[in-house]
Length: 126
Image (cartoon, rainbow, N blue to C red; front, side, top):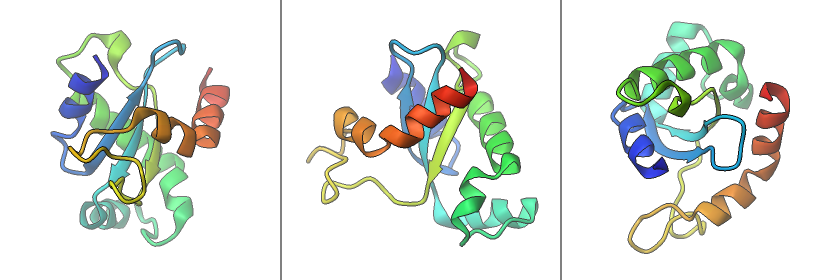
């Protein structure tokens, strides 16, 4: 179940919000809102500029995020581990239409909002 995996990934405090994709797709991936302060600290370690949007797609960042995601989801079967991620700094809120009033993810609107990123992710990793 994606919700179980999302909760597991959020055990890593770098991951402020997580949306797992995988149904009817060749592998599991995750959209991740990174926690700003922890993102800055991680960027310092990787010698990336946390204010530069390109840092979110840098190979070093993607590799590090995947390692952390796999560690957080270690109790899940191998096929359920994320193989790719999309990172963002913009939180998902009720106001931007990505959370319900009870703070649950709106999967349809999230899929729509990140359609291009998701398509690129599966095109490059397929």
